[in-house]
Amino acid sequence: MSNDQTVTIAALGGRGDGISETQGGRVFVPYALAGETVQINQDGSRGALLRVIEPSADRIDPECRHFTVCGGCAAQHMNDAAYDLWKHGIVETALKHKGLDVPVDELINAHGAGRRRVTLHVAISKGKITVGFMEARSHRLLDLDTCPVLVPELENATAIARDLAAPFAKLARKLDVRITYSDSGLDCDIRGCGRDIDLNARLDLADVSAKHDLARITVHGEMVLENRQPIVKIGMAKVVLPPGGFIQATATGEETLARLVLDAVGNATRVADVFSGIGPFALRLARNATVHAVDGDKAAIGALSNAVRFTQGLKPLTTEVRDLVRNPVHVTDLTKYDALVFDPPRTGAEALAGEIAQSDIATVVAVSCDPATFTRDAAILVGGGYRLEKVTPVDQFRYTAHVELVAVFRRG
Image (cartoon, rainbow, N blue to C red; front, side, top):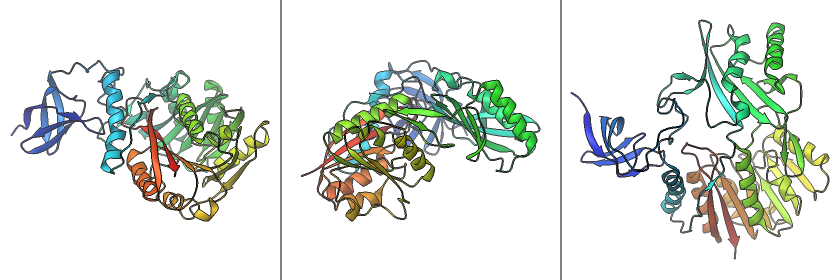
């Protein structure tokens, strides 16, 4: 029996799916927009979009021919106004669910020139190399030629990944190739082939490096060859990226987040930067304040420390490697600071929030890539007497359901 039916879309969900309220309950329809009448094939609470009968005025043609097949993008079909409203609503809804009553600033577009890092999946079968992203709601790998959300320097990323995978065609069935655009060229890290690679593979990789003028190639984070150190400029400093190291998705995104952090910290003279990474905030804060940067990633802290040694004009910036999950910063460690910045991974910083809530730090700035875990941590700070002053959403993951934010908390 056919499950085809016609429904009206009432609203957009947090993942970009259209939501229809039917007699049988809510149905989520990917790629449908609020106000549209659509024909779907329903399977439980999911509806596959078959046809748009009455389109929304917000509907536009997608930029990429792979849209709806590739699982990388969720929202190429809506105009800018609808898109901004949707992403703003993701943050606003998360705050309301936790009872946090604070106005949400307008969404800041931080797409810039595009994403400067990408992780491409590689499948090898019978000598054929497939490179791309997973198909939407599938375990199948979509073979890609290019991706419109990447910086122009990564236009050939899929071709580079194919060439990097070729030396391992007989050794592995699946690989991940991470390619990062740095100021000095492309940094490539290959995973899934094992750490021990033979001389022939190394020679082949050298040929690939020469063909594409790559700055560095690593395998599971271990050096294979380096023509140039991959460097990113952060404030006044030049930081050598650790192999496979993390940087913000777009250069504009990093600059935007840093500007919001610096504005919030203001005239603070002693600042802690927890989950500091390679120092996108610490290195900028240290122009005007004494900074202590803490992170569990030894390589990231090493890169930050090295950058500090070769940068003039900074106030004292100290670093610490610390497992922030097993050994979170304690309230007694926080007495010396008048401001604290934390930018945790997607899982948030529940333990740290509990310690901050007991402290007397005047200003706390939270940077988050997950509104849900942020609101959990924010509720802990508010419960400890902090006032949530403002929340600013920042969008550097164009067309996806990911949205970042910067939140400012004040004591007293």
